[in-house]
Length: 366
Image (tube, rainbow, N blue to C red; front, side):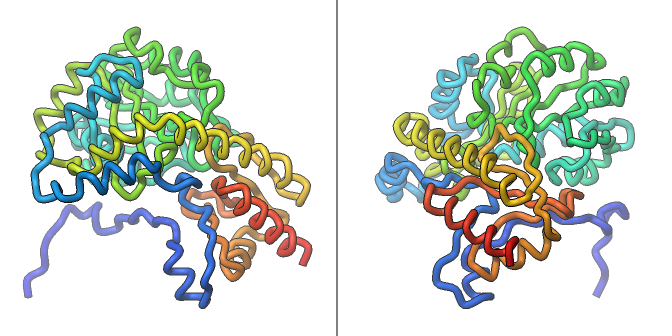
C-alpha cells in the first residue's frame, strides 16, 4: 500500500487534548455521580428558551440553513452594538480563527505573535498554514506581555493574538492597553482579541475594545456562545471584524458551516436575559468563593475575570488531579499549557463548588 505524503512539519503535529468527559470517568472508576469542572462550561446548562427552540425546530433539521446565518448576524450586531457587516458567524469561534490564519497569513513568509501558556489552537493553525509562530514569554505572575508582543511584531506579522480574559490564567487586559497595542502594530497587522470569556469580566467596559470598534481598522474580536450562553455542544461563535475583512472571509468560506438548530439556539440564547443574568450571578458568586477559600487550603491563586480560577496546590498538581478524579470530580491539569504545577477549575453550581472545596480539603489534609 502506498503511503500518503504530507508536508514534513505536519508529521510531528501535537493534537489538541480536550478535557475528560463525565462518561469516561464513570466507566473508569465505576462511579454513578461525577462533577465536571474542567471545560469551562455553563454551570446552569442550556437556557430553557434554547431547549424549546431546538425542540420547536427539530423537524426542520432536514433543511439547509440560510447561508451565513443572517438573522443571527442581525441579532448579534444589535446585542454587541456594531454594524451587521462587521459580524461573521462561525461553527464555533474556532472556525473564524482557522479562517483568519488561512486567509491573512502567507506560507513561508508571515508570522503570528502570541504569548506562552496559551490556547493550543493558535500554534496548531500556524503550523498547518506554514506560518512562523512567535511565542512571547510571560512574567513570573503570568501577566499578559502586551509591550513585548508589540516589540515582537514586524512588517511580516499577520496577526498579534491576545486572549482576554486569558485561558488558563483568567487574567484580562484592560481596554486602554489593548487600544494602545492596536495603535502601535505594523501596517496591515491585525490585533485579534479572543474574547471567549468576556461576559464574565467586570465591569465589561473596562476590558472589551468592542465598544470602541469604529476607532480601529485592524481590530478583530472573537466571541462564543459556548460559555456564558451554554451552547458548547452546538458549536457556535462569531467574529467582529473590519467590514472589508468580514466580506472577504464570507466570500471564501465553505457553505453552511453553522447548522440550522445552532442558529435558532443562538437567537433564543440572546433573547433569554433572565438565564444570562443568572449565569453571571452564579459564576461571579462561585468565583469569589474559590478566590477566598483556595488560599485558605494553602493554594496559590491567580485573580480571575473568567468563569474559572487557576491555582497551584501545595501538593503535586497531577496527584491532586488524580485524587479528585477518584472522588468523581474532574478538573483540568495544566501540563498541556506548560504549567505542570497548576490546575484550572471552572465554577459550578453552588453545591458543586462546595463539594469540590470539601473534597480538595480532604485530599490536601490527607
